[in-house]
Length: 82
Image (cartoon, rainbow, N blue to C red):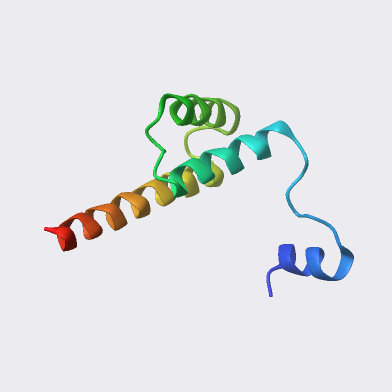
């Protein structure tokens, strides 16, 4: 079991701090999940995230991975529709 899950389950403590940067990441990943990762708002959020964390931070890399996954899923569903 991940330590974050353990903290949440046993101690009732969230592993994600209540800070603006965490809210940016949550909102950006939500937009990606909704297929809105290319909107002006999402691009501005990513710029804030990169400015804060840095281009090679694990948080930024995970967001990039999620965008690639969503693009892959979208390409797959488009091909199936053809």
